[in-house]
Length: 226
Length: 226
DNA sequence: AGACCCCAAAATGTCGACATTTTATTTCTG
DNA sequence: CAGAAATAAAATGTCGACATTTTGGGGTCT
Figure 1 (cartoon, helix red, strand yellow):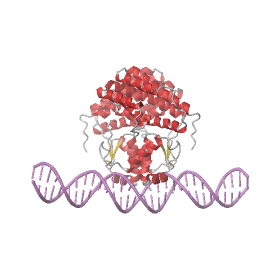
Figure 2 (figure 1 turned 90 degrees about the vertical axis):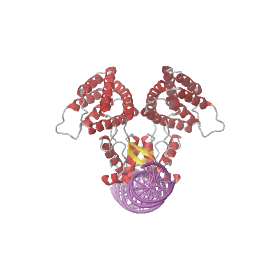
Figure 3 (figure 1 turned 180 degrees about the vertical axis):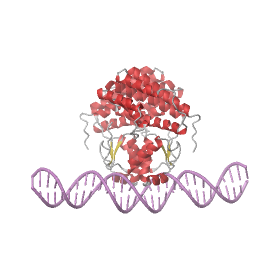
């Protein structure tokens, strides 16, 4: 999907990107209010663009709007994580199967490249964080899916999952996977480019489920302090 | 789904509802610009709330934003309709299967009620238009699906489809179905409440595909004047 | 005639200020 | 002292005005 970057991004767009990054990376606590006044000061702009940015994020499920009471970061819960994971699995598998069916040689190359870069330590280029490379890999897997709607939904769900992941990591660092994530990724990539759709879907499904399990275990009670 | 109606809706929310209705009913041509100035005059409010309303509608896919160039009604195309239909079919079938699996007796009642009311002529209550009842029926079918994410996606896709339908009807009236839509609805409802999931999904899938065919045929070239 | 530049009209994006609602604090009462 | 009413503080929602960008038209030069 080509990023239609406008020649000159508007303040609202810029604010949306920045705020999205803050929420996704776990910088602001779930359920906390978005005080536009302080945000406006930090971002060095008026409240107008901030309102629009928050509205856009609300569309992605990262922010909730309550009339006359402003915006607040969407709360998290065990049920939400379960629903999110289950739905993501379904959507993601549909997209993967499509992608395997439609992908050409270039697609295979991108998948293998993203998989290769994923685990290696990119010593000199920390501009691409691990989260970015991880996102790029999963995106490459489904990139050949022809349905823009499905891909849009998938992206939304991926973003929401990423927030949970970053919140868990931010909370305490004991979320270290006992599993070999690297091997899982490689197995998925190989099955995908080899056009073994059933196997790839099975592997990806297990991969997602396992990720969710780790996250659920990471939240003993799910009451974030702040 | 309980409508969390805030005690006092804000102007932006009101504008969003009104504008959504206008776009869905085919009042404004696809691809046309949303001139906020004239809209502000018609709605008797400032451009601020209008901006927010348009932003929300952009999240639902009814409006597209281009930085520095404002908002415009999302364009329509044959490919978009095809993708939309295919994706909707997938999502809708997932939701229906879930709903059949989880629905209780009350759900069965609501489905049958919505189906019964659908075709009958409600002589004295035109407040519920046919579109509303049609929407209510399809919503009742999947109402027992436990996944809020899936239902949200389904609702979005349904709305987008409804726009195409209204545009076709608005364009020229020869979009009269040769098929017996009423019978199709009834068959789906019966299969659903009888817990014959496979049959219900097959019927609903054919129903959706047939609707899309009618729409595609309704657009000879798909170049809206204006 | 066609392409280019320049300029005016219109529309967008942003800001600061005001009215209203919510939220927190104080004060009064039983 | 508890609880509720009254009040003060803060935050939201909305408006009108200004700066910037896009858009459309006219004129000029090759």
